[in-house]
Image 1 (spheres, rainbow, N blue to C red):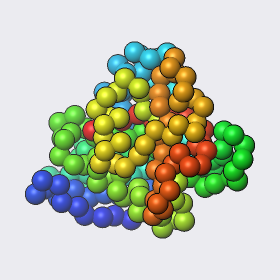
Image 2 (cartoon, one colour):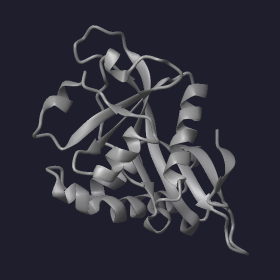
Image 3 (cartoon, helix red, strand yellow):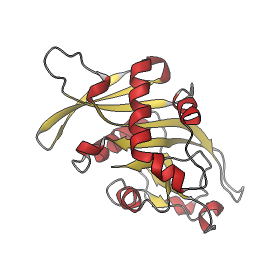
Length: 211
């Protein structure tokens, strides 16, 4: 179910909501799409994937997709969770992962599909807060493996995920050893000392981000 958390970011309050697909309005999904397109279209077009409005809209409407949305405090007279007040978000799904080597059991994971912060407020720590909320939501659901992938040429995103967000490139995933591929798969284990590279990684659709 939907829940909210108030966080402080550089002395400013933001409100974070976790929602299922069914709890999203069309207007909020449009806001998610628009931020993603603004931040990522050029990167998609620089890759072998290319950009498609149609495909991205379909992915945002996937019935299994879940959302963590971050809003600034609304101006006077405007309701909470107004699309114009959206400052950042991530989308994720719960999935089953397996070892590329085939030597491990299926394992529940949360895979991040998009993680974005509006350009005007990047660098304030909003991305870090949203990722921390995902850690909490996943752990409470009994899911301790998280995954995402990021364009290899997106240096700032790689630095964020491998730094403050606590992810690492999972070299057990054969895909990561292929230099011609566009993305790296990264993984993170919550509340466990072992490295993601001690077990095989999972497969999923790409997630990229701008913080």
